[in-house]
Length: 178
Image 1 (cartoon, rainbow, N blue to C red):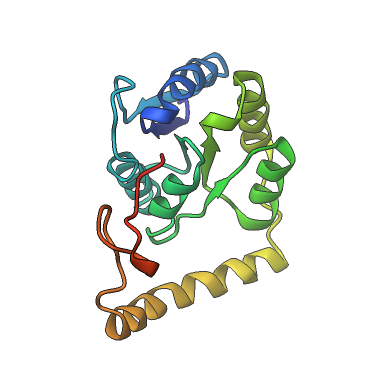
Image 2 (cartoon, helix red, strand yellow; image 1 turned 180 degrees about the vertical axis):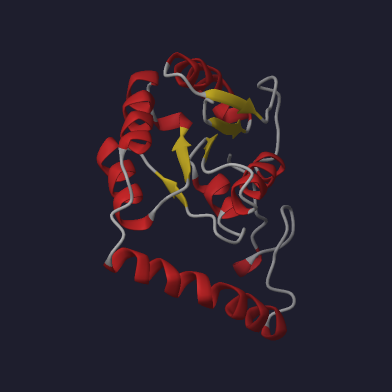
């Protein structure tokens, strides 16, 4: 049975997602395309959360996300337990993310990569195993403190989240760049 890998993007990553879907299929993977189905403007969180849910719950071993910078998708995906989403802009980054951090979600900055570069990063991420050892201990430390820190932050900063269009630090409105 072929491994199924979920992929998703926002509008900025749509074109690259389509190309990488075909690349994954050529490499023998089944692809679970979570969208979008066009390059119409979308919110990255609407696609990052469903993919991260699949990895977090074990429905998928790994997944691939794309947005303009990779940052928005990684922020959203890393909010999920057991998800280690890494933005990679070079094969060496993808390899180290797998070896040292057991990155189970690859996030690509679509506005900064050619199709060829993205495929090289994808191949490095797919082929690289987790080293374990001292790195496993480090991941466990992250896992055991995530929930406690989130609860603590919520108690002390209930208004911490600033939405788009609202006034942020210094009285400036936040704007979406992705």
